[in-house]
Length: 357
Image (tube, rainbow, N blue to C red; front, side, top):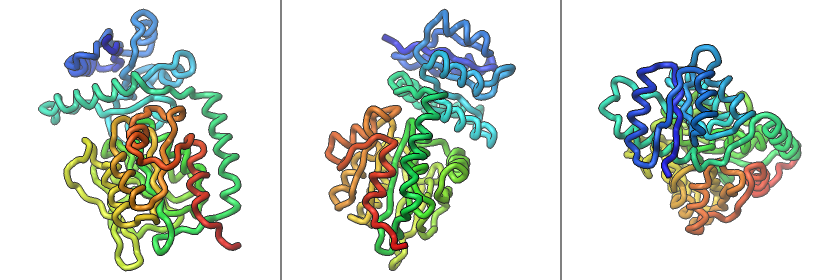
């Protein structure tokens, strides 16, 4: 049976454009379009779609307000469609926090010749959203935050050794649902945590804003990697959008290297590129973590890490938004330990010796 999609956008041109793009996929059907929140509410009740595409900016009740009410009263899969300006990116990241499954840029006039490629990407996101595990926003999210605060307290009192010279480094990969999963992991880390390098599949304009938001919310420093940095204790590096991230050694120093070689598994940045680099350069001094996401990116790289002696973790199915990447890694023997997202920070930190006070 086809996936039933309701398109919500205040622009009639964009509603027509998105409808045409989506309808190319044989397994997806656009059952209706709406230009504002009241129309969307009525169509939700009448048409019972499986997935919504939702404009971030709308007149009257904007996309965020509509999404928040929807996730409280009638939770369902939502893919946000955003113009990726600075403001649009901030709003889209907030939408992911509120429970949207994924986000995609609006098709731009200068890229109309790439509509086939855009349509394939949007169709993949709609399929992933249809099968995603939804997060309940209000009271459940507050309870989860309280759990994370309780879990992280012991580690604030017991800082951990780290550093590229003789210490372990943590490598994390994520995709769909990963922005919130990464935040939960970092909330459990102390300010002087081991160095952490992260690949999150996201549009190019997202990485700097995502890093800045995490930096404000989490104990460690969080930075968008620029390339050439010496990795440091207490710092988290988010891969710069549209770049692969690798590590290399210069003497006792571990450096970040950004490259724009072709996409791997359809992604740039690719988790496999980071993990393969960690296996080759760090060996048993690396810790690998693969989180929620669609597809198989990261599975082979995590296997290389485990074969090189690294300790490896996979997020469990119950706490994943999309149990794709961790499942692929588990099935090929790449995952050493499976853990709920609220346990990963503590399980990883248990591998590190406690500093003498």
